[in-house]
Length: 198
Image (cartoon, rainbow, N blue to C red; front, side, top):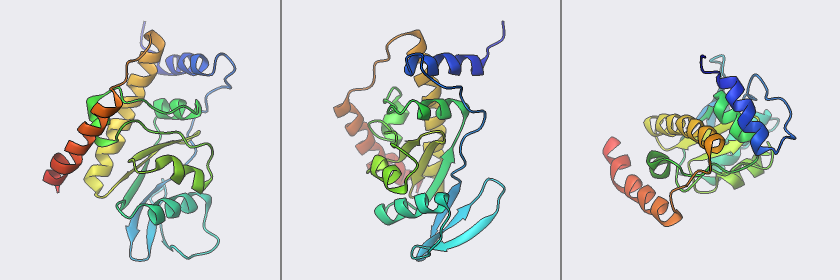
């Protein structure tokens, strides 16, 4: 029988929500991508449409408000992209953090990715903290980085980690990498490999 990803994710979701879960949405909430610019940022919609915003602009869209809040709090972030594969969307809807089950996740993202309580910009920025990815309910994850290559690395590892998270929860109890080891791996990555890429 062929692998049915949608069926697996529904089963995972029902396990994590203890049987009280609503049906998984077919499409994630769109939060878009962005690039920092002088005094603001450029928001890039899924259609490719680009709009320039200043940090002081009034009347920003809900998506733009989230991006603005992250940029204002994180001077080390120049790129933000949304990772919204079906696995990440399912994980984000559980409201639980994503544990570090993979070495490259610990190295690049840090010791886990928190899940925001809501789509409020403050909640998303608070849950991101000093890490490089945050789960957003119904939207998958926002991946942040100083460079576009690092941003792509965060997105790829988050998508891979979502598959490991869902599969491991179904077949048994996952064993995350210990917190001190995560901190060390992330520190080494930031001080060596990340700089080599630049």
